[in-house]
Image (cartoon, rainbow, N blue to C red; front, side):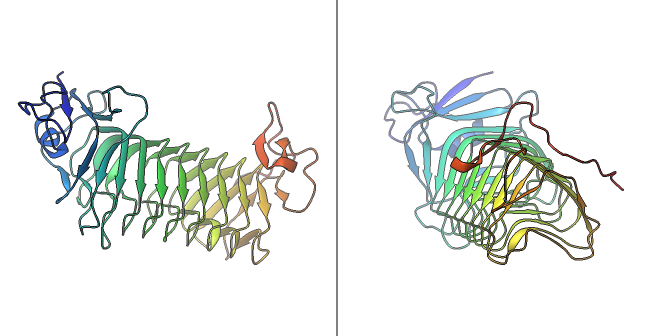
Length: 325
């Protein structure tokens, strides 16, 4: 298990052995680091081509780690910046499993290119994206087709030309902000997202949470999106202890292929006044669903008057039990 360094401004031997002798491109690190290695990165790299991760693989128990640092080389949440400069290529192209990225800023992929992309036709498993900020890319923030069993933690997807996070098969999305994207916020498109926890999804052109497979969402906010707050197109979705408000077309939509359970949520204020809409959906609605403009008394929210829609400790999640089909 080796440790390497990347600094685009380094002027030493450039063998990756220290900050003074750091590699000057993340591509070198992608080609050289192997399972169990850690690569520390600092500064800004302006790109003339995509960074391709297509050589060495990690695994669930032995990932290859790429971690951003501050100017002094310490890990404090500062980002290592990858700037596509408006060129028409996706910035990170991933075609191997077992990678861990932390403290990266990915921006300015041009045309319809993505911040992070996988175009493999075979599944690549086990990824961690921690404190990754993806913005101002022409396509999706992250086009995660075939990136399976990923964890997106403390990530931000902002002002991209497509959806914030597209696909996300069998993945966890935790404490993320997905906002102002020209597609949907978090779009699973026919594949099952495992769960979304404590995410804020707002200001996206299409739906905030369009579920395409089995999905559990808890303690999320889907607010002021261009169509529905949540949209379930297939299989089963559970939306729990979440706020879904002021979306243009309505709150939650399900079609004829979906089962939807809504538990302990706060909904309403939508442009069309549709709170729950289903087209022949086999929808299950479990009590304690509060409609915007009504009373919150007894619903367990900490302080709805100040916009705090988290549930209080020991709050009841439902007032009546309806058997699932």
